[in-house]
Image (cartoon, rainbow, N blue to C red; front, side, top):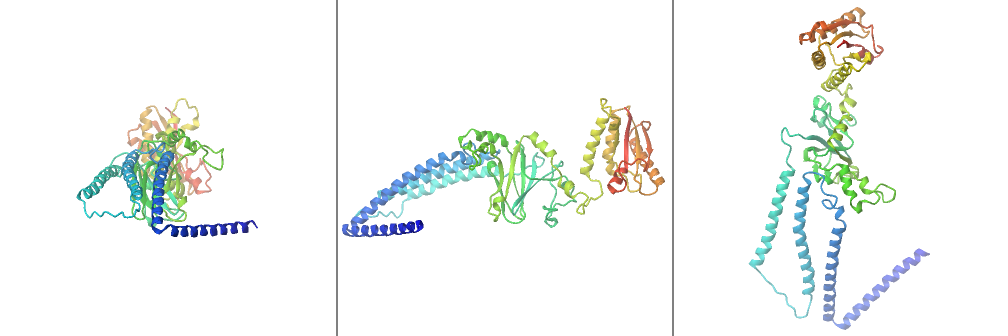
Length: 501
């Protein structure tokens, strides 16, 4: 019943409006056509003047009210070194365009009022005016020159690539529907090469070429972590359609184009926490971050930088977001130590690994660091734990079935040599061990020969052989079960036992 009454009321309203319109038409006919035109022109022109005033008042109010929400104003000043140039360019452009905007619209509405219809008024036609043409052409041209030159200077500064040898952090951002992959270089500070033909979903999303050793320490991150004050070069690529790498608070935007790699170089100048403290000073950011939950953290506290896609790349476009954190250089270095190489965690010793079963540089360096640390601990006079004085040399390698040291062993052997030089009284026992595969006597002899090979290397590099004794124990002292290959691999070892120092 209520719905019927509402529908009938709406119909009645339309009928009343139609009748009022008819009455107005009849009244206008009675008054005369000329009177009607004059009245209409007066009301329209005055209405336009009122609209002009209300329009500009709303424009000014809106600019002031929303200033602290607009990039470049209030707390939202740029958080990058180059952002100030972009904001300055925007302000200069806005200055000139707002002047033209205001003058043109005031003139438009005033002329509509001043030259409204009056009986007998004639139009003045001016076919040509050199002075007016000169002003109309010259002033915009002069302003355009200012804007173009300022923009060109800013563009050349902002889009300059890094110079050879210049210190910077390289990061690669790969976009596809609908995600970002953020790849960082490892300790070598270099990103490895890729080939789209090597892409395997779930295994090798980027098509990294594992034969390129620069790829072996690269890692992927779920968020974009950047150090304050360090220059960053983002390599930007797309795997399917057009995307855009957009960091609004850093004034960074660059298209990600399939088949055409792009880049952007910038330097963050404010950590996430510093930016939050700037927001904290403004009342607009004191309210709850979740409007539906009054107890949610305030907007300033919940703020985070973000990476977004600025192209409409498909139905899932909204989901192409990544958290961005700017931290101190010390925090960044600490964060790097927690990241794991994708190759080592997902590819190493699988069917995808071209180095399966072979030692690689990244592992050799890691083992070398561990060996140095273990040696320092063993040679610490305050350490009374005798077990720490027997070191398992995991990074000593031999040719298969022989006592010939491989080239990959040099890093560990040089660490041992340096220990003898640092501690002239150092005396050690080097022992060889084997698994239980094959003849026991052959394994015993091979373990003795391998221990002797290590001693010979050190002797040939200036170490007094009287400080080194050797023994071969064959398969008699396993440290793991020989039932599985992993255990057998650990049993095939060289031990370095410190006797005195």
